[in-house]
Image (tube, rainbow, N blue to C red; front, side):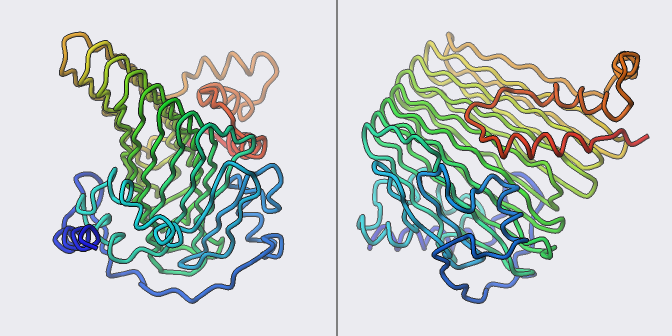
Length: 406
């Protein structure tokens, strides 16, 4: 109880605290309340339009080849099931009750007073998921989780916890989206992930928001000795305002993190994204790779490697491709060593497609659009491991639509 009161006190003190990065969002323009949605025992009974949206963000509606599913629509949990031994999926409220407040994890990786968005989530939390892989279990199929906005104007606050216990392996696919008719809304997501000794967590996230939606994820990952955290983040559709800067803390010897991002900013989109890796234990390794394309939107692509312990090694890549003179890509790579034998490096490049590259491909039989698509496909190819076929097809579909804004 004391911890709960302490969390609330911190949150109340930060309710007007602006974020260190990104535009300030006026939370009062969104609705606090959403209508209660019915629980759906079979997601196949959702509307065809909703199923189409879900499939576009990697959600298998029938749950085939999935170890379990969590679905939240606005403020309601509409489906939650576990279909494989070795993994547990609950809504976070049930997990807090079952595990006596999750004292070792709840608000331990992310502080409630980071900014007004964490503060709001601490005081207005509307569910979220709890996923736990038991020690030693190798979960064959991914777990999938969907956070969906179906009501115009609402703000959705969720708090998620993933624990991969010692020696376990788990892949989680999360899809975040809005109904096709929803234009305006806001999503605040607090995520705390814990990768224990010798464990592996692959986390793949797709965003497909409405064109006037604001998004503020706040994510921190703790990786212990010889643990591996792999993150794949993909956002290829318009979003009004997205700001996120997930932090991975490598706290045990030999811990490793790899963060891959594919970002496309259409006109009207404003994205301030990136990632930070803190190498806090000897022998830890990190890699952050971002591929960013602007077709008219604004992208600030940040990366920060902090070497605090000896014999650490990390690499950062920020590559951007500008397909429109109306767009902006701003790369901000940062390397910070606090020990004399941390090995940190980076590559950063932003530019346009060279006309001769297009001409070269056109001379070999491709038309202009096919040539551009081929170049973009090669640019975005960062060999994401474990990506389901449906996501690969979705990415390919978006790439085929690229053209130069001349």
